Image 1 (cartoon, rainbow, N blue to C red):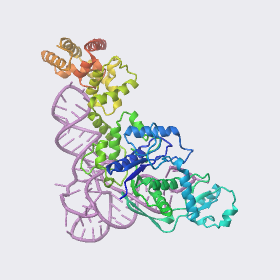
Image 2 (cartoon, rainbow, N blue to C red):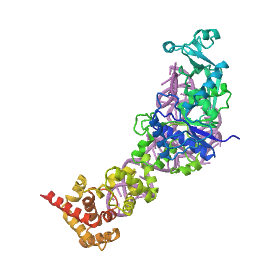
Image 3 (cartoon, chains in turn blue, cyan):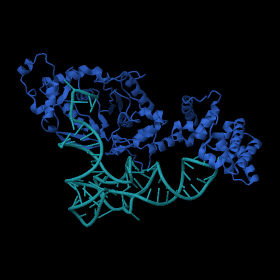
Image 4 (cartoon, rainbow, N blue to C red):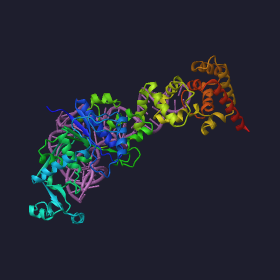
Length: 486
RNA sequence: GUCCCCAUCGUCUAGCCUGGCCUAGGACACCGCCCUUUCACGGCGGCGACAGGGGUUCAAAUCCCCUUGGGGACGCCA
C-alpha cells in the first residue's frame, strides 16, 4: 500500500488566487485526513512570468490561511524541506530534458522545425500538426539536414482512447484524435508545463492530484505522458471552479481574487477556510456549516465534493465571518482589532489592555468584519463633531428633546458609580420619576455621546468613555439642541 | 467551431449512486412578529426550486435519451 502524497503546484506569477487556495486546501485536508504528506511545488518554468515578489506574496497567503506544507522549496521565510527536491520546477530542468530525450530516442516524440508563421498558417486552415506535419515521421536524414535550425520537441500523440478515472468526475473518456501533437520542450530547451508536471509528479511520488476542473482536458495529455514514460498514473480528482458573484471564472484583476484582499477587508482566515470549504463540499453531518480547520481535517472526504461550480456569495461570507468573530477569545479579538485601530491612526497609547479588551467585548457580536470596528468605535478616539442626520430629527429636534437630555444628564450625575449596572439603575430611576421610557433617555444620549444612532450597548460604552467625557458631550449636545430651536 | 464537465429556492446546498420515507430539508439574503436602550444577536413564522421535452417503471428530483442553459479546455502560459 503506497502512502498518500498530494501537492499543490502554483505558478508564482501572481498572488495567491482564491481558486489556488481552494485547491491547496483540499489537497492539504486530504493528506492530513489520511496521514499523508502535502507537497508544495513552485511551477516556475516560465522564467518570463516568474517574479520573486510573487513567491513572497504567495507564501504570505498560505501562511495567513494556516495551510502548511510538509515538503517544499525555500519559500518566504520558510526553509526548504523534503526528500524529493528540488521543489522549484526551474531547478528540475535537467530531469525534464532527460525525459524528453528518452521519448525522442524511443520514437514517442519528435523534433519539429516549423517556424511560427508556418504554424499560424496551419491553424488558419484548421489543420493540425499531427496530420499536416512533415516532421512527425521525418527520416533521420531529413532531421540531420536541418543542422542547427531551431526546433521544439513534440509528443507524438498515440492513436486510441485515453481514459481518466476521476475520483470526482467519474470515468472520462476522450478520443486521442482530439489532441494535436503538443510541445514538450521549447526551442530554448525549457520544458513545457505538461512534461514538467508529469515528470515531477512521478518523481515526487504524488499519489493524488486534486485540482480545478479547468485542468480536466490537460489531464488526458498527462495520462498519455505517464504511459509513454512508463510511470504509474496518480489518482485524479478534478473539483469545480469557484465562480465570482456574476457566475464567471474569477478574473485575476478582480478584487477578492487575491486571498489577501479578504484579510485587508477584515475577514478572518478561519472564515475564508470555512467558506471556501463550503463552496462545493458538504459535511456528512447534515445541516452543519460552521467548521474550523481542525474539524475539517477530521471530516473532509473527496466523496462529499460536488461536481457543479459554486458562486461566491459575499453576504453569506459576511454572516460566516460574524460567526467566527463571535467565537474568538476576547484577548485574541482585541489583538486583531488593535492592529486595525492603529492602522487607522487612532492613538491607543492611553488605553490599558483591560480597557481594550473591554472594547473588544462590547463590539464582538456587532462586527460582520474586523474593519467595522472603526465605524463602531471611532467616538472613543476622537471628538464627536457631527450628529447622524436621521438621529438628530428623531432625538434632538423633538419638543421634549431637552427634557430627555437633561433627565439623562441628571441620571449620569447622580449615578452611584460610573459603571454600567449603576448607570442603568440611575437611568431607570430617573426615567420612572419623570415617567419616561428608558429609550427616551438612552437614544438621545447615545447620539450625544457617539454621534450615531447605532453602536455598542449604551451603558457599556458610557462606562468605557468615562464620566468626564460623557458629561462634556452631553453638555455639547444640549447646546446643539438649543441652537436648533432658534 | 470542436471536445470535456455541469444542471434542485435569488445564492450555497441536502436528497440522486442503492427509484417509493420528498405535500423536496437546511443555510445566506429578503419580509413579518417576538426579545430589546440603538444596531446586531437570538427565537418564531413567511416568501422561494427539482431548466424543458420525451422515455423506462405500478411509482422518477432520483435511471436513459434529446433540447436548452452555464462553465471549462483547445499556446514554444501554467
